Structure formats: structure tokens, C-alpha cells
Length: 477
Ligand code: NAD
Image (tube, rainbow, N blue to C red; front, side, top):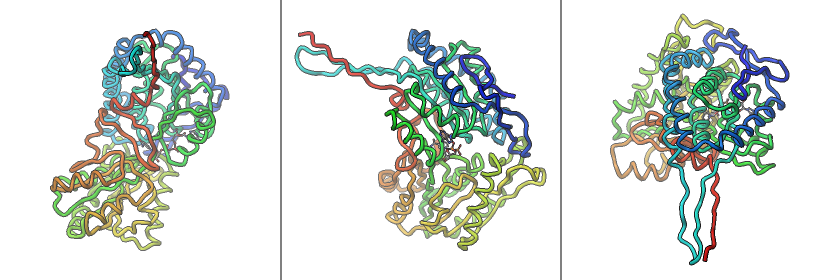
């Protein structure tokens, strides 16, 4: 049984109740976590505040940086262990789980180096004045994290917040907490003071809600679904608490007739099958130039049929989905496609070794999906690629921008002028030209427009969101 981690100690929740963790690869219980309540959040916020007002505020930026670097190294040393934990918890194929553990280490490395480079300005002003701006930490930051990439999202969110001088109370998703509980222990081992990183587990509507409402939380970083993002925003508005919202997407991959298809095809596929499609920035809509629609779909269909799905430890193209309700969600979308006569081009295969009780879904390529159909508008959050065709740039842009989301976009063309035109016109927080995701670099600011949220995490930019600016004007004559 796993306990909360508050003030560098493993602690049973006040209720003493637990939530059972299921292994997505076989659907069987293998561990349990605390079902915490508001009083556990209260305890974590008090401990965090004591740390902030005490030892943490006396640490110089350079000392904070060294601490973050020690954690980065420690995580790298424990990458195998962390990847194994995440694999069991989330059903991630081995390569993905390992990539996530190393990305977590890299986030702490990046933010370690950033701690002592974050500074304000001096501003030329009236005669007799000197004016400067100071970048100050918010204080105690709350972090609500989804289940799809727990380690990566913890790294970008908590890493940035700590680098900027905050202390953190973290609420991981109820389906995937275990790696983060272990990382908090590792942080204590490398010298993070009690209260700097606190992890409180439980259900979103209970403990997540309590975290968002807590008056001692000075900033909320929420990554999750648009619906819960709305709730967080409403709750935060009651006390004017600043919020960063990293929400969902329905991101387009746009392929023009002059594209390098050899390069595009594997990337287009990876952008929807990575993490079994459970990626906020998944390239879920494929917009193809009509001139190459049929031949490209034929090649993609052949490639989809070769994709294999199975238990996470087999390290195939896809592992299982996180839970049964997620599997059911994908089935519901596919059944809608069937009812609407949306043609299926191809599906991958679930291997024989996959237990019937696991949460598997074969990757599926659909074609001629109507732009306004639910399948082209809403997040499936599974390995379903929806293809449609366009005639020219204007039509491609109209289709690309025709959802409420704007998280990422991929554009494939060799025409340099078109690359710029498309990048300017597409409504999206990130644009990838002749690639998708750019390898996920921790240096690259990430976030959305429209219903994909606001604020940026990752990169140096995130540090502005995790601080507030104070203007100091001195009149000295
Ligand atoms: P979710 O919104 O159901 O849950 C996210 C987190 O919020 C979990 O920790 C959950 O317990 C908590 N939560 C749920 N209800 C809450 C409430 N009422 N108050 C406070 N907290 C609450 O999302 P999910 O299903 O875990 O994750 C998938 C979603 O996350 C997708 O929409 C995906 O696109 C999005 N996502 C976005 C990004 C990004 O960077 N933009 C990254 C990863 C995932």
C-alpha cells in the first residue's frame, strides 16, 4: 500500500481509505493508494508554507539550482526503476516508459540551470527615480496532473515551479501516482527540505477539488481535460488565484502533395499511436491534399495493419489503454463512426499474448470523416486517426482551425513560402513543419490557444508563469 508523501514523510491519509490500482496490461489489482480528503491537503499546504517561510526562502537561486541538479542525476540513476513503476501503473511500452523517466531527469537538469538566470529589469523613468522589477515566486503552488504522462508532466510543472522559488503540493491522477511518490522520496534523499515537494493522492472531485479551493494555494497548474479545466477555473476565480491550464487537443497533421512522404508516413503514424493515442498533442486529424489522398491512405493502411498491440512489457508499437472506461470511450467513438458510415481503412492487431482482461485497442485509421462530426471535433484519447482531404491551402486552414482546440499542428510541405503562410494562419500553440513534436524537447514552450488552455509550461518561458512581477520605484531626487 502506498502512502501520501508530505513533509518528507510517508503518511496515511486522514480517512485511512484506499483506492486500488489496476495493471492496464491485465486489468488486475496490484497496489493501492491513499484516498485523501481536504484535511490531507490542508496538512500538505501547512507543511509547504512552513518550508517556504523558513529554509526555502533562505536558499539562494544557485543553491536551488544545485539541488535540482542533484535530483536530475538521482532520477537518471533510478531511471530503470522509475520506468518499471510507470510501465506497470500506466501500461506503457518499455521504450516509452524509459523515455518518460529520462525526460523527467532532463526537466530537472534544464530547470536546475535556469534557477539563477531568472531576473527582472531596470526601467528608464522620470528624473529622480530608479525603477526595477523583481520576479518573485507565487509561494505554494498546486499541481494537478493527469495519468497519461505523470513523470513528464511532473517534471515540466514541478521542476519549473521549484526553479522559480515556489514550493509544491501535487495531486497526481488516481490511475497513476506511483512514480511520483517514488520521485518525492528521491528528492528527500538528495536534500530537498521537508515541505518543498508534497504528494497527496486521491480522487479529483475530492482531493483535487480541495487543492484547487484551498486558500493557501497561490497558483494552480492544471493539466487535464477541458471539462475539469473549466471547473478549476471557476473555483480559482472565487479567490482570484492564477491558473495555468494545459488541456486537450484535436491536432491536425496537414500533408501537401509536395511533401516528403518517406519522412511523413512514420511520423504521422507515431503522432497518433504514441502512448496508445493518449497524448494531449496527438496528431489525431490527418488532412491530406486531394492529389495524394488515395495513394497516401493506401500506404498508411498497409502500415497500420502491421502495428501490434500487447502487454506493456512486450514493448510493442502500442500498450493497453489506461483503464476500462477509456477503452469503452474509444469503442463508443468507433461505434459512432460505424453508424455514420465513416469508412475504416485499416486496423492494427492485438497480439494473442494480450490477456482478455487487459484494456487493449487496435489502432484504427478512418477516412472521409466529416469535418464537423464528433470524431473530427472531440478528443478520442485513443489510437484513432481521422483522415480527410482538402483542395488548397485555404481549405486546409479552414479545416485545421475548425475545432474548439488549438494545441499542436504538423505541416508537411517542401515549399518554404507555404510553410510560413501555414504556420502563421494555423491556430495552435505549437507548429511543427516537416516533423511532429520535435522530439518533445524540454526547452520548447508548450501550451494551447482556444479550449486547449492558456499559459505556457516547458522551456524558460514557464518560469514567467511560475512567478509574479513586482515593480519597485525609488524616488531619490
Ligand atoms: P482529467 O481532467 O479527468 O484529470 C486530470 C486531473 O484532474 C487528475 O489528477 C484528476 O484526478 C483531477 N481532477 C478530476 N476532477 C477534478 C476536480 N473536480 N477538481 C480538481 N481536480 C480534478 O483528465 P485525464 O483523463 O486524467 O487526462 C486526460 C486529459 O488531459 C486529456 O483531455 C488530455 O488532452 C489532457 N492533457 C493535456 C496536456 C497538455 O499539456 N495540454 C497534457 C496531458 C494531458
